[in-house]
Image (cartoon, rainbow, N blue to C red; front, side, top):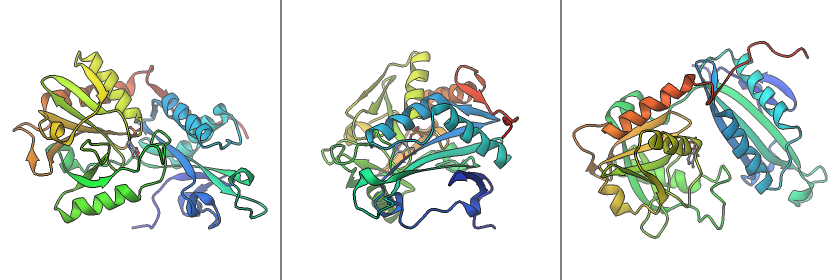
Amino acid sequence: MSEFPPGAAFIGGEYVPMSEAKISVLDWGLLRSDATYDVVHVWKDRFFRLDRHVDRFLASIDKLRMTLPFNRARLEEILNECVVRSGLEDAYVEMILTRGHSPTFSRDPRDARNNFIAFAIPFGWIASEEQRKAGMRIWISEVPRIPAASVDPTVKNYHWLDLVAGMFDAYDNGFETVVLSDGSGNVTEGPGFNLFSIKGGKALTPSSGVLEGITRRTAMELLEELSVPVEAGELSEKALLASDEVFVTSTAGGIMPVGEISGKRFGAAVPGPVTEKVAALYWNKHTDPAWTTPVARTLAAE
Ligand code: PLP
């Protein structure tokens, strides 16, 4: 097995195979986690909700006071070209802007030249095929998510040490993945996913201390389409354990069922009826021209 996945990257202004996509050890993206990123997927040759992902990426860049060295149209062109060069029809497409580093080696982030990187690799799932059938087994960790006042979770970021500590906590307790608390008895999110509780025919997803996931927003729209009332609000650990069904949402896999949380198993039927309906509708939308953008296989002349 190769050390690198198949795919194509754009780095330093050039397209290269994944094995050649390398950054400087001086980049503050590496040294300080000073970076933002976004991930959109391509399914059967169509980007899913590209506009939403690009909106969020551009908003994150503004919030971090960084500058993309080109406009939105060029960004979309580069993402498209990474997919075309990768030869993939189902792809995981990541765009990153790191702080870069200061040409004078000052420590002042205002002096840095921001560094853009993008790549397309094969589509990946946060849940295995088995987990997508039987439901993921999730541990609620006592490790609290980094407070939103310290690191704004709506800026998609690589501050993952709390999530990684939580994953080890979950593994140590015999579980497959984790959701972190907010330190006050409520749950937030997990490594790469948001969370939904269904109780008495209504849906609830945590409103604070979380990334505003594009799949989370999509699930809210789909639940409305299915006439399931949905709200973003406080979700206590107790309320989560008392749910009828629970599902997680992520660009890396869509809407995926949860089978067990910290020892509490969910019903005989996993996925539950609401999860099953919303997940089916989610995949149906992958051919809807209103929600998707076809990959342009013919590239503009250089
Ligand atoms: N929460 C965190 C911390 C994430 O990193 C991600 C995605 O990587 C999500 C939630 C899900 O967001 P999206 O639905 O936009 O993929």
